[in-house]
Length: 90
Image 1 (cartoon, rainbow, N blue to C red):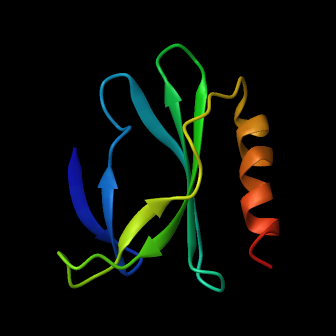
Image 2: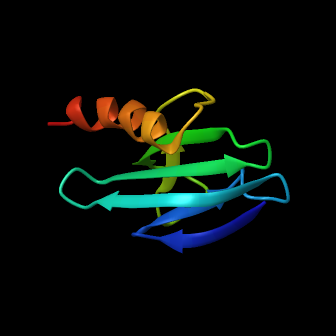
């Protein structure tokens, strides 16, 4: 697990390891949302939508998941899944 500053908040890469790699990342500054998709070695896709949350331990906010872990069969279905989190923010 690694931590870094990303788009003004602390990013903790929890899924990126030998079994999953980041294949999609999109930041939406107008609604302060970060969406990523990981691809597992078995070919499945893990989409996540994040929003910044304040944490007393850190000066910067922390990117916090909006959704539970789900597995999708294609990157297209993963992006469609994430689009629902964009629609709820507008």
